[in-house]
Structure formats: C-alpha cells, structure tokens
Image (cartoon, rainbow, N blue to C red; front, side):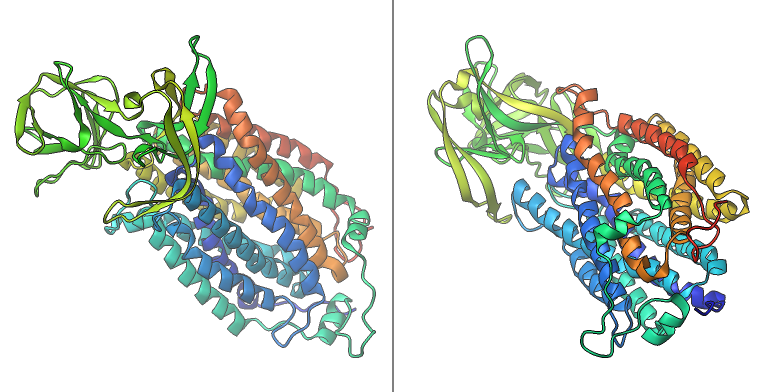
Length: 638
C-alpha cells in the first residue's frame, strides 16, 4: 500500500472549505431553534423535546451515508454525491423553517410544520457535513491529518461566527427584530435566506475544486476495494453490528467523553436564550393559558380541557394562542358593557379600544407613534404598542373618557375588564380547536378539527396557566440577537484555542483541560447578569468546543483501518447524537423538577448542569488509549 502524498495547504483547504457553508446553516439552526419554537408558542418545559429530532436524524442518516459512500463510485466520486443531495435539501428547507409562523396557522399546526422543517434541515445538514470528514480520512496522510482537521475546525468556527451574528447585523442595518404573536422576526427569516445562499456557493466551489481519487488509485493509497468491474465481484463487507463488535477500545472510550460533552452542549443550545433573556435583559414575563379546569366545591380539579384555542358554542374565542379573550368591562357602578362597543379616550395616548379580539387592547394612534418599549400603567401593560391587561382587576382610567357604541361618553374612576370565561352560563358548550387558520385581513376563523365539551359550572372554573417569557417583547428579541453574538464569541474563542491545542505534548491532557475550562464557562453563564461579562463565559466554552472538534476524530481515525473508515465515522456519530437525544428527553423533566409550576422555569440552572456534565467528560478522558498510527491499531499506545 502506497504512502499518501503530502498535500499543499490550499488543497487541504479546498477539501474542507464547504464546511464553512454547512456550518453557517448549522449555526443558524443551533442559535435560533429555541427562539423560533418559543415564538411559535412552545412552553419552556417542552423546548428540549424539539431538539430530539436533529440528533435522531443524524444518528440514522450519518451511518447510512458513511456506509453507502464507502460502496459508492460515480463520475463525481464516492463522497461528493451525498454533499450535493444534502446541500440541495438544506437550501430549500432553510427558506421554509423561519416562515413556519407566517402561514396563518394555529400554534399546534405551526409547531408541527416547524418540526417537519427542522427534521429535514438537520437530515440534510448531516448528509452534507459527513463527506468532508470522510474526504480527510480518504486523501490525507497521517502526518497532515492533524493540520487537515485543524483547518476543518477553523472553517467550522468561521462559518459559525457568520451564522451566529446574522440576526444582530440585520437588526443593526434596519430589519425588524420584533413581530406579531407567533411570527418569526424579519432578522431571523432573512438570516436563514442569506445562509442558504452562502451554502449553495460553498458547495459549487467544492465541486469545482475537489476531485476524488478514482477506485484503483484509492485502493493503492488506502487498501480498500476498487470499483467492481464484473457482476458478483463485490467483496463481502462486514455489517454494522460486526463492525461495532470489532471496534477498537478507543471507539468506546472517546465515545464516553463525547457523551458528557454533547449532553452539555444540547442544554446550551436549548436554554441559553431563556437564560440570557431573563438574567441579562430582564425580559418581562407573560402568563400562558394551557387549559380550562372545572373545579368542585372543595377547589379540586374535576375536568381539564386543554387546547390553545377554545371557543364557545357561538364560535366566540374564549382562549386563543394561550391567551384569554375579553368579554367586556364592568363600570364602577357595576354596569357591564360588551367589549366590542367600548373605547377609552386618553389624554396622553390618544385612544385605546377594548375590542372583542384576542387577549389584546388595540391601540389606534391616528399617526401618533406608540412607544416600542415596555411600560406599565396600572394593570395595562403596553408591549410594542399593544396593551395587555389583567382580567377582573380594577384599572384606574384617571382622566380617560369611556365611549360606548361610538357616541355615548361616560366618565369613570375605574373599570374592570372581564374575561369571556367569567361571563359563561352553566352547562355552556366549549369547542376545543386543534387546528385553525384565519385571514389576517378579516379575522375570519376556520375550525378544521375540534372536540366539544360541556362546562358544567363556569363559576367554579379557572384557567390552568404557566409563566413564560414574553417572546413578543423587545427584550426577548434583543436577547435572541445577543445569544448569536455570544455563540460567535464562543466560536472565536474556539479558533484561538485551536491554535494553542497542538502545542500541548499530550492530546489527552489538552482534551481534559479544555473541557474543565468549558465547564467554568457554562456555570458562570448561568449566573452572570451583565451581558458583556458573558463574553468571558462563552470564550471559555469555546475552549471546550475546540477540543471537541479537533481531538475525537483525530484520536479515533488513528485507530481505524481505512477500508471501513466511512462506516466507523458514521457509527461514531452516534456518540454525538445519543447524548443529545437523552438530554432532550430529560431536559423538560429536570426543568420541572427544579422549578415551581407557578413560577418562571429556572433555565439558568440547566447551564449549571451542563457545566457539571463537562466536568464528568474531563474525568472520562483518562480512560482513552491513544494510538500512534492509524495503520496499525495494535501499535503501542502513547
């Protein structure tokens, strides 16, 4: 078997350059998925469950791509065809995912659409990413492999920086960073569009610059099977289970370290947005209604009717997108007036209409700009020009004049806004709507599927609600942009630390040290309340990320025979996917266990738990046996 020739720097660069575009897509996904689903209406306790699909699809797709590409020989090569397919799908889905809330769908429908798009996006990213890892194994000799993976690490982090800062930059140049309830802001949508365009350009560059070795030449350098020339000449290859049984010990020990590392980073991607929004940006809280509960005389729950959209028998909204709808107002003298006929004329904010719409008081400004920040006036909370109110509590109208039916004016010291539930009669029929759409222009409602229930005693009914961050607020969306900046800081820290890593004599020592440094970053990120102090936290996290990108594949490929390197690298991807799946399954359970049901979920504690996980990963490094040469797995360990 011939020794692979040394490759020039730019040939090594070209082998991995497409990683830049793929990583932009991956960065946009990792930094914005929690923000997207929270904006669509997902509860914080459910956020981790949306992260099950990406690693699950990676675990399925990457071994298949790895094994299939080991046996693929085409005019374009054995790895590049999978890059083309993966990138093409990724570009299309990147244009769909951020628009999941823009089609007039209900929360449940928008989330389902988002989940499908996320599944396809992660599948395609995994398919496009895998060929670059295998090209290095195919075409780079042992001496240059460390440099090749370092270049790949650099491009990976450079792509991450671009993807992470896109929303912040678009906000800076004037794109809108807030949107209506359930709609993703322009800054996020156009960031995905730009990422898709760059990914397409990177793939075209790779196809123009990279030429894979033909089968015979590949066999001379790697010892693998050439392309069969006659029917029936294919050599028998071991199955995946047999490959696992014959895997070197390094495969399993590095996988153990990977488990703790990727478990930690799954929590970072899931809970950083909520942590930063509350701790560093003081994001306002909001109450989301999850169900209507029927109580007995002792106050115990008899029945619970869950739906994001609940209507009465006349198709009037009672609950919409987790918010209660107004029925009307009660004047100081006890007179009740239906909401749709009431307007408050105020001296300082023009007029406020208490409409029959969804959990909001509309604010016609007549050309007078409303404040875009959040402030409170009694129980009226103005958010981006739309007033939110607390039901069944008196509101001091001060000098306001109440106009009824457009002409009758009444002065009242205070009023009480009543929710529709409190106005229902005994044995009222309720419609639990699962999927609906509406025309934004007319407000027309179309119920596509529903269940009908009877609320026996509305006087003993109440809302089951949870406290969440207000995703429509300026603070929340500013925090979302800042998360991108912090992730970019992490990537910069990773690039700088990647330069330092080869200077250590022991890979194992540098690996363990990097994870411990990252653990400090995670724990501090859970407690820092200054947005700029968080630069320190995420720089430290970047040190762990650099080691996670550089050392596992370098250490593993040194212990593998090249004939099945694609299959083994695909299988090794499970050490990335499985811990993320487990973390996603446990995230909501852990968050519920450490928080109170009637309080805001303590997402910052999940960052602390992530830090503890990295400490366990650093300790696990001691079990790794590192080999000197990938050509002889039985070589003496270093």
